[in-house]
Length: 498
Image (cartoon, rainbow, N blue to C red; front, side):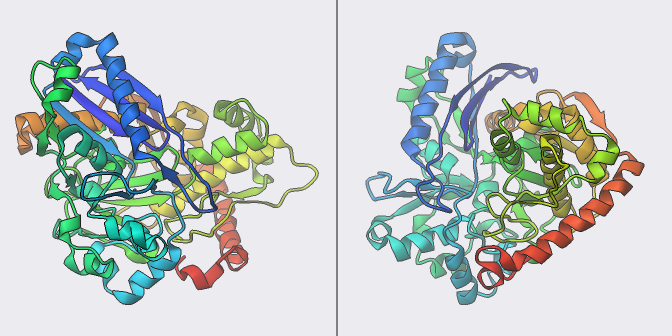
C-alpha cells in the first residue's frame, strides 16, 4: 500500500493506492487563504500540519488495515511558496503562496542584478516564484530575514514535520528560481543575488527517490507496521503527470484547477522564458517538462458564479450552454486575469474585463464569455510551447466535471482532450506512485510499471467548423488585452513582458 499526500491551496488530500493500481481510499481537509492586503496571499504552515493530522486520523478510523500496510509515502503540493525557518526549526512568518503578487519590484531588481537569470533557471523572474519573495522579506522584514536559516517549499515543510529532514525534489525546486534547471542543481549565482547560500537550501533528490523515513513516533501513532520510506515527491503539476502516466516526451495534460496549466513532458531541457513559459524538471530522472500557467481558470468560474448569484460552477456552465451558436458569436469577451497573469504575459497587474456588453446581453452571455475566456487563455499558453503542438492532451482537475466545457476547450485549442478515470485525484495519485517507486526503486522498468495511464473515460475531439468560428473571437481577445494593457494598474513600466 502507498500513501499520497497532496498539499493544495484549498485542500490537503490523502490517497491510499495498492499494488493493483486501485485507489483504496481518499480523504481531504479544506484550507483557507489569507489575503490581508492587495496582491498578498498567505497561509499558516501549522494549518497544513493540522490538516495532515486530520486526514491521517480519517484514514486510520476508516481504513486501519490499509494504512498499516503502507510501505511508501509520496508528497505533492502547491509550488513556489516560501516557508522561512529559524535555527530551531520554527516558522518565522506566514507562508507566502504561489499567487502572492507583492514582489514584482523585486523581480525587476533580481533581473537587473543578474541579467542571465532566465538562461540559468529557464524562467523569467515572476512574483509567483520563491526567490523574489525572499528579496521582498529581506527588504521589508529585515529582522525576520536575519533569523532565517532555512527556506522550504510547502510540501517540503510537511516532509520536515514527517521525517525531520530538509529535502526537496527537482520538480518543485525548479519553481524557486534558485535551481539551474538544466544541471538539476542549485545555482550559487542566483542564491547569492538573494543574499542566500546552499546552507539555506534543502538537499535535492529526484522525485521518485527516497528522501528519508517517516518518524517512528508518527508511524506508531498511525499504527503502521513499519516506518515507510518518504519519496522526494513533486510539485503539484509534475505529480499530476505521474498520476496520469504522462512521463514520456510529448505527453501532457491541461489542468483545470484554481489555476490553468498546459503541461508537456520533454526528454531534454527546452526553455522559452521570453513568453513566460516555464521549463522545469519532471519528477522522473533525466526528464523535464514545459508548462504554461494562467492564474485564474476554474477559479474564474467560481468568481463569476458568485457575481451572477448562481449556486455553483455547474450552474454557471449549464447557463452558458443554453446559448445558441449565433448568440455565442455576439457575447461579450472576457479577459480572465482576475489575479494577474503569467503565461504568456508575465503581468501581475493584468486585470479581468467583460468587454462589449449591451442591454441585449443576459447572465447566460456573461457566463459563456467567462467559460470561453478561460479557454482563450489556455490557447494563449499552448502557443508558447517550444515543440510541436500536441494533438492530444489529457485533462485533469475540478473543471473536468463539465463535458460541455471540455468540448468548448477542445474546439478552442484544436486539440483532442482525453478524460481519464480518476482525473480529479491526479496529484495525490502521482504522489502515491512516487512513494511506490521510492520503495521498490526508480529503474526504467519500474517507472513503466508504476506510471501507467488510467482508463479513458471520455474523449473530446475538436470540431473544425466550431474552431474556425472561435478563431475570430480569439483574435479579438488577443487584441483586447494588447489595447487595454497600458490602462491596467502598473502598465508597461512595471512588467515589460507580454
